Length: 257
Length: 288
Image (cartoon, rainbow over all chains, first blue to last red; front, side):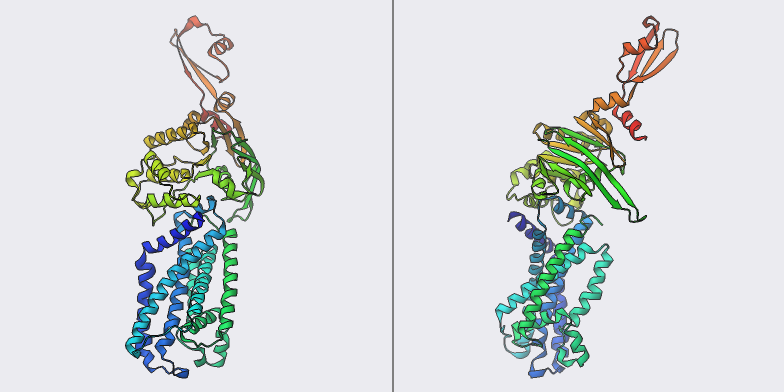
């Protein structure tokens, strides 16, 4: 247990040492999204059921903050360790692989949740100013469920990509060409019901769509897809990405870049 | 029981550029006695670091086994790693943490909580205590090396692997490091070291092995290696003013050499002997 807690402590301490870059910067981005899209443009957006666009946007931005930061946390932990050479310290020490995966995973959830919660609080202030009422949380249990599962999925994915990547470019390409489009097309800013049918079908192939909608359901009590489907897809995603991270540690390189 | 046994260890990998298989280790056999210092010598690319990689599980061997205090590194790596401390060749440049934090984390990796006493002892012993709040990038090259040694010792290992621990280190620091290694030996720690400083290996090691192109060319005591593979030079200054030089096996004594070359002692004004060194023997064996 001491070994695991040390790894976890190291993960958390690492990102807190550069808190401006790891926490403050994504919160500033969320603030700007809320201001520009939620407050300014959102006033002219009409959603089904008369939902306020700002209320729709807040859970989406929270998930975006959660998954991006969970992914960045674990992937940058592996990559900086590859640069500095201290990944070899983990390899030569008596540490089972699953300790490393869970420590990096929970570290990712911690950072992702911190960013998401603060973004959510900022969003709630905007919502209160605009609507003169507090944005309620419809299903707190499910919110925690999607926080944990979403954070872990993307932290595990970060481990996988960082271990498999042979250069910094490859890691960056994954973020730019896969993670970012999936996030934007997964329903952070828009409801898929406003899309043409073909795009609705394609969106349903995006696993992030289920995570975002599950999380949105936990706050607003409604979303584009059923809760059970979202919960199940997240659980399957969690198992698959954990196995991918395991494989990466077994087959990937611990050596320096 | 031996501290370390390497049994018919082979490692083959594919050269990424040429796409051809390369035999980095060709069936290495060696063992280290408890409490001894074993020097693994060889030119660059001989297979020293690959061998250390196989012992520490950084490299997966193609076949063969490595046992640390009787336990297989392949079958039970978590157990063998608890007994082993490693100082790898390349310096680690952890950017985020201070010396003190790094040693604290390193202790935790071995299941040790609140290991301050040992960490403080090592920092003091290795002259790092006054730099304990500095980050790695603020340390000099020598301090970084000492930090790596401290990291390898936080869990009080019974076997210490030192891969070129003095590479790029100045003379004064090298001497203090070797003194420290001797102290570790006196504490009963078994040590495997690789070094390019053959003179030091000759003084330090109880046992040496020469590895070249993945094969062991010699495995024995430094004295045995010198007497077998190097030569001594006898320089005679005769009363006539003539200087003569005779090169012979280290096994021959001066009297035997004089007898062999039928030299009359009465004709000798002065003589000088240049003893064979490990370096000579090494050069002869690996052809450098």
